[in-house]
Image (cartoon, rainbow, N blue to C red; front, side):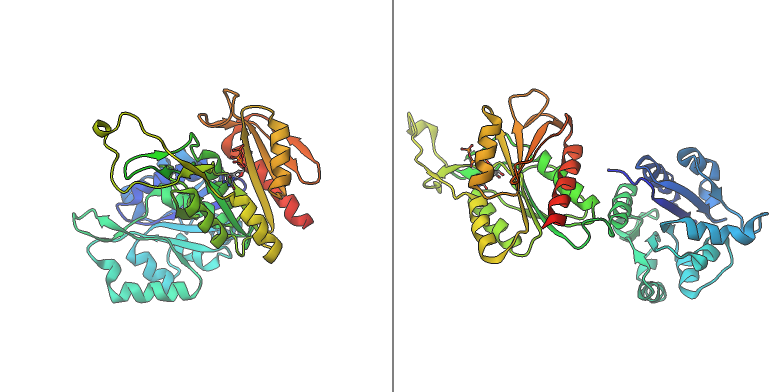
Length: 403
Ligand code: CTP
């Protein structure tokens, strides 16, 4: 996921967390943002301007009194999409709260038209001090965002609230914030992912090979467009895309209940999960013992078709607005996908040939064909699952605009 065309003004103040700000500047740059840096005098005691210049390839500003200073602070604040103060000390926080204008950072913050986010870093219980909290409240009341601080071990060895959020989390917050006015802003998108597990006994289950990666990528792509994303996930160890609300389920029955509840007012449902078609008729309460049984017969009963239940709900309520299914097939891909598109009353079907070695369950790439209910057919090239997800979201956007 990238931050192309975003201009971030990173202001770094004098905390030991400064060393992490170099990593943050690097991560923002690698994500595609243009990063300008302001270092306060105190910050320069910890880190050098050169380090930031080296990782961003951009300008590093330290001086309020340079040749172009009379316009610099105005320019910096005007060009930026976001002024991120990270780390922000208690001292700078106080100055910002009270409108001081005694260094390049504070002058720029006063002149800035862009949103301001603060990632505080302070030690020894300073964060809880009523003076600091009053400054925080005053800035929040003016719309300044606070990202962190986190709880944990601080430089003094004390444990408490005051650590700057890790650069990786700050990067995710910048991304999410950057997407807030995206094409899907205000839209509710529900995505299912992974393979359901149908319990045999407390230890064993019937499952499938779905990794969940394609569904998680769809959630990520929808977040990039500014959607409000609910990710209903069967068990897996993938990290939740930052900003998504994750609902963990295990069985097809649990997924059915979660999908109906969360799509009751959703704009889009993308059903990427591999739902077990059958479950054991009875789940044994005790573990089956090998010694006692030479063979074992499982009686399986058919699970409800979640998409059919969603189609019924849609007929009654109009929600979800757009329904997308996946068809992972090992033969007659298009015929099966087309028949499921019609049977499950979908707007769009993503057809996926799982016999290809570079697509489907076990790999990072995918090659899919999008079948529309209007008879349209779009073959997407082999690409990463995230790029497949992005292309899919663009197609869904088109459907939403036509609806
Ligand atoms: N699906 C569903 N409920 C089920 C089974 C599948 O909603 N009980 C959804 C899947 O999430 C997917 C689409 O239906 O989006 C197609 O899934 P697939 O397993 O290919 O279809 P089935 O209807 O189960 O058909 P079959 O397994 O016989 O191919």
